[in-house]
Image 1 (spheres, rainbow over the protein chains, first blue to last red):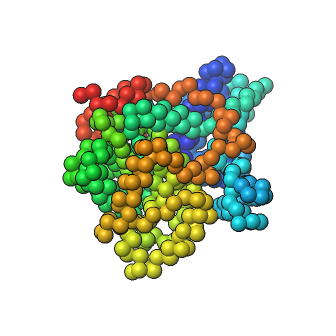
Image 2: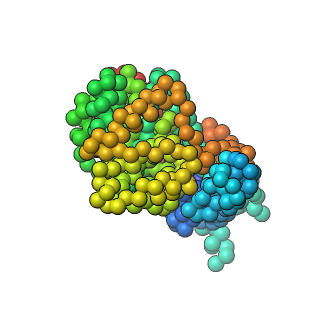
Image 3: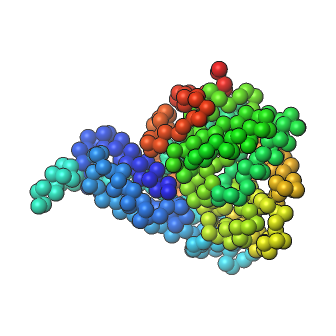
Length: 126
Length: 275
């Protein structure tokens, strides 16, 4: 299960950004995950919570924005949703996809910093 | 009050950066890496045994690195060919990553090595997401696995530069639908070459070595649609990772070098055996 490796990579990059921005805590991380990125969002969510422990991300929420896969035909420029499993053969002509427009994203979109760590936030809310 | 920052960073930027460095370092020393991906039991090791033997017959300097979660069985088998072989135990990790591979090659990869075969962990899911710095990614499927394998594992087959069918000698016995398999491969990876191989009869063994040697000579490699950068592809906007020299496997799965060579400084990516 490589979702743990991916979760750790996300945490490391957010930690680096936190140091650069002088942030002390993270409230939420938004990820873009393409349909063909080979990532299972539920597994990633589970691994993310584990990977965040004892870091500036402790208690942070992960939001995954799914991106459907779309391709463009090299011959007739038709664009289509390739589906899963993907079909990269053009639905309109005998051509094939010249380009995958979307669907391979695995990207941190943005991070929302918090003023204080999750534990302090929970205490206040409680 | 909360502040939000746009990061727009590719999650695998560190691995991809390390892979680019490793590919450049290998290219600079005249070595082509071949990344072999398949499910467990598809016959990677059996085919690789023959490839290494044939390379030796043809006096092509080759080396092989084989990754498993446990046992040195594959290194023992491959080592009989007489070429340099290294076993990597991943300590439970289901795939290789570029930094890990660079660490294992550093100080070990003999000079000269023209072809480096990397036998990835037997798994068609996770290894597909990690560029190892290879110049030829080969995905294998045996005839016993069914013709719909490319549809079940579209990322692995969709990113292959070459697809091999193994155990072709068993095709008739298991009613392997070759045309169906080829159609399924074409659906996820239009234009990729599919070669039939058999470690029992030797079919296709020379063909794989020939393809790898052609890459070494600069022949163009099939570029899968799924692997081509697109104008709308957000990966291309990912900021350059300046931390890709990280010497450690940051996942806590320190790969064990069972031959007792401590993973050496990977900052340099100096791949020549200095011992």
